[in-house]
Each structure stands twice: as structure tokens, then as C-alpha cells.
Image (cartoon, rainbow, N blue to C red; front, side, top):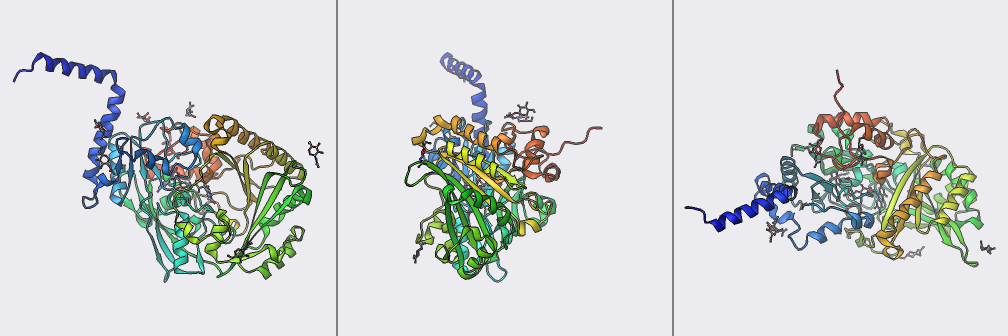
Length: 538
Ligand SMILES: Cc1cc2nc3c(=O)[nH]c(=O)nc-3n(C[C@H](O)[C@H](O)[C@H](O)COP(=O)(O)OP(=O)(O)OC[C@H]3O[C@@H](n4cnc5c(N)ncnc54)[C@H](O)[C@@H]3O)c2cc1C
Ligand SMILES: *[C@@H]1O[C@H](CO)[C@@H](O)[C@H](O)[C@H]1NC(C)=O
Ligand SMILES: *[C@@H]1O[C@H](CO)[C@@H](O)[C@H](O)[C@H]1NC(C)=O
Ligand SMILES: *[C@@H]1O[C@H](CO)[C@@H](O)[C@H](O)[C@H]1NC(C)=O
Ligand SMILES: *[C@@H]1O[C@H](CO)[C@@H](O)[C@H](O)[C@H]1NC(C)=O
Ligand SMILES: *[C@@H]1O[C@H](CO)[C@@H](O)[C@H](O)[C@H]1NC(C)=O
Ligand SMILES: *[C@@H]1O[C@H](CO)[C@@H](O)[C@H](O)[C@H]1NC(C)=O
């Protein structure tokens, strides 16, 4: 059959359009090929089409946004994923790796979506999101006091499910109840049980990981080096965490919490100065966080600083008051300040829910009331002198919406060596600080981002003389691109060494060696991932 001239015209026009849109067309065909590849690599009894969203699907946008926790990132994201795979079965995650790799797409892994810089849902190069949110089973075995927890479960769900089985067990992990276990544990994971039991990863005993070839490994088959790396080195550089096996920890049937607040007029500066010497040395059962914030004072309407001393004690009021009077009498803790409750109820207290809230709220899987924010972190090995605190107060008073927390180290954190897991911030730290500047749409939304981010940088710079140095250490779970980063297609080892030393200290080189073993082509990467250790040149 001969082609008519009109058909030829159409063919040439299409060719012409093709040439004009060459880059667009290539990425479209990469997407088509990727989409066609998926069913070939996943279990047919769990159709992957049920899990695949492209911008064509009406719910694409809402699925993208639902777990994009930081509005600063969500509102400024310049590129969207070409597809989101909301894995409903392990094979969907495996297929995503195999097909993205063979068709030149990057994978961004998202569990709870709380990454402070949004690295789980943004990238500057064509990417797909592998959303682990639906893989969320929690299987608890009380006989061995262990549990298998899938990456998409939240911290709140974990706490709830443990409490269903036992009132005298708990697990050391984060305060926010919508964190995804996948991302949260792999960066360390800490909460008020840290001084007693260490981090989440210190209580992880096995894991399932999908490697860059799409294979599912466990502790035995991944080997001790990889198992070491994903405990504190961030999962995202090594593969996809499918699940963690954890050892539950014992807690008393009743724990005691309190929140005692003092303003500058009430001696907050002296108390904060003393706190630094006392809190890291208290018995392990006692975790005492310090949270200073600017408030509008009562009475004259002038602004002041109010410091909250927020305590968690694995025991009851009588013993707690005794301990506090012996160690920190200046604070003047009273019995009436103390509230006794079950451990699971204490997770609500820490998450900021009002007294009396039902524990069912732990099953709410998505963070409501999202804000715009920028966070930075510091470790302190020396006491901040009073002049330093006064400088800090001045800056806080100058910034409208700021939230800072000082979390005491010591206790169990002191006993675990820096090289036992990839998480290196151990003995010698008095406390870790989180500085978060946050604002809402009403405060200017994305248009005000630059101003607020600048405030966080100013605060960070005035605290430099007091914080750790060489390197100035930072907490991976408080991801901060300011401390050094490369582009989305990150390959530069020299750049990685800079943020690597801050996040991982001497563990960075070992992490890069492990990376070279398991993912030599650097398939799993983001702006702050760990590139493979370059081969020595001869
Ligand atoms: C409101 C709030 C409170 C917080 N409180 C605490 C706290 O008390 N203690 C604490 O330690 N941290 C806390 N964090 C920080 C939190 O631990 C980190 O942001 C953590 O990375 C969140 O994990 P995610 O799965 O929710 O986030 P995601 O954004 O989904 O993931 C975070 C990172 O991990 C990667 N990742 C996610 N899932 C996987 C997976 N399955 N396999 C491999 N890589 C994966 C992502 O690609 C990304 O790089 C808090 C954060 C917020 C926003
Ligand atoms: C999304 O749309 C595609 C067609 O564009 C369809 O094949 C797929 O099943 C849809 N996904 C879901 C989860 O409905
Ligand atoms: C999206 O829809 C358009 C037109 O409806 C179609 O041409 C395209 O192939 C679809 N893309 C996908 C990925 O389904
Ligand atoms: C409140 O602040 C103003 C301006 O700084 C100051 O002049 C005034 O004395 C303050 N009032 C009190 C009661 O401290
Ligand atoms: C908390 O609520 C309980 C009842 O639910 C009540 O007995 C207790 O006094 C409350 N405590 C505080 C500090 O409000
Ligand atoms: C990435 O690294 C290269 C080489 O050091 C550097 O030129 C580039 O500016 C870096 N990119 C970013 C975004 O930091
Ligand atoms: C990412 O970097 C690799 C290696 O340098 C290169 O081959 C690839 O084309 C880059 N991809 C993109 C999308 O820039």
C-alpha cells in the first residue's frame, strides 16, 4: 500500500514536532518504557497497575501532596515526579527499582514524608516516587519481645500496636507520631527513651532491604557491613528498607511526665545554665528536655523568653521528685507538676496532644496543620556560658516564629561506641539542639521563605563559637542542605566528604566503602547521599 501525500505530511509534521521536543519526548518514552516494564517484574496476583499514578490520574496531585510534610519545599518544588508508585506489595518496590534503573529514572523513596528538605519527594532530574506508605504491617511477638515493622508504618501506629499487646513494653523512637519508620529509623531515631535505651537503631536486630538489583536481602544476606550502614547512615544511599525487626524495651506500667516553665524574670538563664551541667548526668530513667521560646510576657506585654523543662521519668512521682530535689533543686519541681500515665499515653504528651486525648489519635497517619519550616542542628560538648545564652535569647526575641529544643545526651548514648553503628554522635556530647524557624501562609508563605531561612542561618552563625567544631556535627534526621550538598544527580566525592564528616564523622569513609560494595553505580542517590568510595588511582 502506498502512502498518500497527506499521510506523509502528517508523518513529517510528527517528526518535526518530535525533533522540537526532543528532551520532552525522551523523558515521555522513558516513562512509557518504565510503565510497561513494571508488570513484567511484579507479582501478577498483586497487579501493579493499582499502585501506579501518573499525572493523568485524578488523584496524582493529592497523593503527591499528602505526605509532603514541609510546605516550604512543596510550594517551591520545581519539578514533579513522572510517576508515583504506592507499593501495595513488596514486588512493586522491587519492580520500581529494576525498571527505573533500566530506563534511566531516579527513584526517591518516601515513607512518612517528613524529610526536612523534602528529598523524598523532590529532585531536579526525571524521577519517580516509590511511596512505601501502604506497606505498614506490624507483627509483634511477645514471646521473644520482638516485632517486624514495615517501612510505611508510622511511629504512632507502632506505639499503639505495642500498647495493644503490653502495658510494660515500649520502643525508643521519635516524638512526632506521623514519622515513617523507613526514613526515621535509618537516620538514628531518638525520643525520650534515648538516655535509657539509645536510639531506634540501637534496638534494631534485623532488616529487609531491596538492593540496586531489586533483590530482597535480610541481615544475613546483606552482611554485617550493610546492616551497619543502614543503622544511622540513612537507608536512602543503600537501598529500600522494606522492614525492620526490633527488640521491644521494657517500661514501667506508670511513667511520669512534667513540663515546668520559667521566664527570664523567674531565673530562666541561671536554670538553663545549670541544666546543661545536670541533664546529661541524670540517672538514665530521667530525660529532661529544654525548650526556650520567645513569648509575649504577661502584664506589661513586653516579649520575654520562657524556658520549658520537659521531663520523662521511667518511674513514679515520689521517686522523681526525690531525684530532682537531689540533682536539680533550683528548678523546684513539685509533686503537683507531675502527671503519671501509661507509657503509650506519654507518647501523646510528647507529641503535644492535650491531656485526655484518646490514644486512637496515634492511628492518624498523616500530619495535619503543616507549616513552612527550616531546621538546623548542632551538637554541644561544652556548656554554653551565660553570655552565650543571653546572645541566644536576643536572637530568639528577634525572630517571630522559632522553636528550639535542647535534648540531653549521656546515659546509654555514652556507652555505645561511635563505630558500633553508622550513627557517630555518642560519648562526649552534652546535648543536641534543633533550631526550627517556622511560619504559615498568614506569615507570608513561600514568599517569606528567604527571610525566614536567613534567620535560621543567623541563629546558626551566632551559636558557632559554642557548638561542636571540626567538624561542626549535625544530625542526619534533621537534614540541612546548607551544610553541604551536591545536585540531585550526586556523584561528587569531594563534596560528599564535607557533609559526610558532619553527619557521620569518621564513619563516613566506611559508609562510602559499603556503598561501593552494594551500589557501585550509585543508583540510589540524592543531594546528600553517600557516593561510592572512588577506586584508588595507580
Ligand atoms: C514534626 C517532626 C518531628 C520530628 N521529630 C523527630 C524526633 O522526635 N526524633 C527524630 O529522630 N527525628 C524526628 N524528626 C525527623 C525525622 O526522623 C526525619 O525527618 C526522618 O527522616 C523522617 O522519616 P520519614 O520516613 O517520615 O520521611 P521521608 O521524607 O519519607 O524519608 C526521609 C529520608 O529517608 C529516605 N527514606 C524514606 N523511606 C525509606 C525507605 N523505606 N528506605 C530507604 N530510604 C528511605 C527518604 O528518601 C529521605 O531521604 C521529626 C520530623 C518532623 C517533621
Ligand atoms: C492511573 O491511570 C492509568 C492510565 O493512565 C491506569 O492504567 C492506572 O490504573 C491508574 N492508576 C490507578 C491507581 O488508578
Ligand atoms: C495520559 O493521557 C494522554 C491523553 O489522555 C495520553 O496520550 C497519555 O499516553 C497518557 N499518559 C499515560 C502515562 O498514561
Ligand atoms: C517594656 O519595654 C519597653 C521598651 O523596651 C520599656 O521601655 C519598658 O520599660 C518595658 N516595660 C517593662 C515593665 O519592663
Ligand atoms: C489529665 O486528665 C486526667 C483525667 O483524664 C485528670 O485526672 C488530670 O488531672 C489531668 N491532668 C492535668 C495536668 O491536666
Ligand atoms: C556539585 O559539585 C561540583 C563539584 O564540586 C560543584 O561544582 C557544584 O557546584 C556542586 N553543586 C551543588 C548544587 O552544590
Ligand atoms: C547523572 O550522572 C551520570 C554520571 O555522571 C550521567 O551518566 C547521567 O547522564 C546523569 N543524569 C542526568 C539526568 O543528569
